[in-house]
Image (cartoon, rainbow, N blue to C red):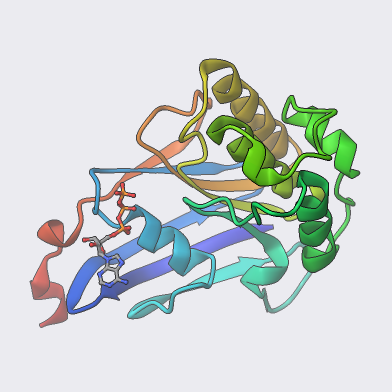
Length: 215
Ligand SMILES: Nc1ncnc2c1ncn2[C@@H]1O[C@H](COP(=O)(O)OP(=O)(O)OP(=O)(O)O)[C@@H](O)[C@H]1O
């Protein structure tokens, strides 16, 4: 799997948030987006995930051996600011939903529910309603969603918000393991994720957009 983003520009409301963003990520590579609040990190992640139409440019996901590009929904996990879990349902019900909803588009298969819970350091409490959990526990289980169904590309918006230091290290380990298996990671963050050998793209927001390029 590899990902090519070419000449991306995106608008929010009346404002161009960024222009001319290009990058290439091969299997096993990660790109971290940094920049102040409002600089366009989430916007770029949503464009790459196919959730927001770019004003200009293209994002193409090429699977190994496939001729055409793949649909982002088939190849990406998107973990946004919010956890996308129902408070009234148990953790197990939430993860079962995501596993069934996402399905399996490519090998390898995702982890069974309890194995995913163990991987995020929270085995034995999947019978509890999601809403009963602490903010950090909720974030850990939101991350477990990435494990119950396999997707080669992980798009992560502030994955470690609300986490303690041990969870930071745990997430870094899970991300490193994903990269080691040929996965791709695109993440926005304000704090270092503790990953080795990652590329960084510093977003500047519309203040940094050179309106001239549109002339
Ligand atoms: N739906 C929207 N309509 C209009 N403007 C929006 C909309 N969503 C975001 N924006 C604006 O787009 C800009 C970029 O927002 P974005 O969420 O991408 O920034 P960010 O770098 O992820 O910020 P943070 O670090 O605070 O998460 C901001 O100025 C924001 O106010």
